[in-house]
Image (cartoon, rainbow, N blue to C red; front, side, top):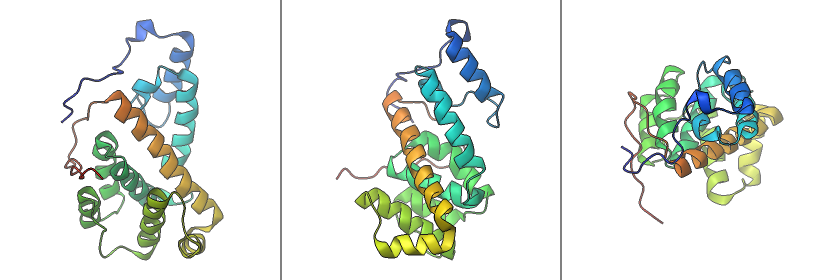
Length: 191
């Protein structure tokens, strides 16, 4: 899948600094249970990695949106950044959490999904508009506010931003894509 070499490959544990060891152990002993893909390149900045990990734990596991909608937002963000690692990890989780296979396939292909549940349609409109326009119009904001409340809107912005950060990290690092049951993202034409 990845035609370029990994720029920021795993560091041997015996070479870790005290900060790297401390923060890596926090991640390994947390809900992720291991030092996974985005945190391998982030090891080069251990404090950044630790803060990113804490934010990610909240956004992924405890956001006001719940797991199904959080996973949908992650897929939209992975598609935005053509981030194959995030896609490989989260497409199967999204399916397990109740995002339909048709919705996942449409996002994978860069198409607007059809037949979305109301909450999914609002989330999709908000996220795609935010990425496309770097903002959302009043109508989109009001729909999201009515559906998710202020905390849910902020958590949605947070998921889009956090997974954009991870996507940028792994795109720069050229992080290898793990084995996955998910089909890779379809390449999008250059704009």
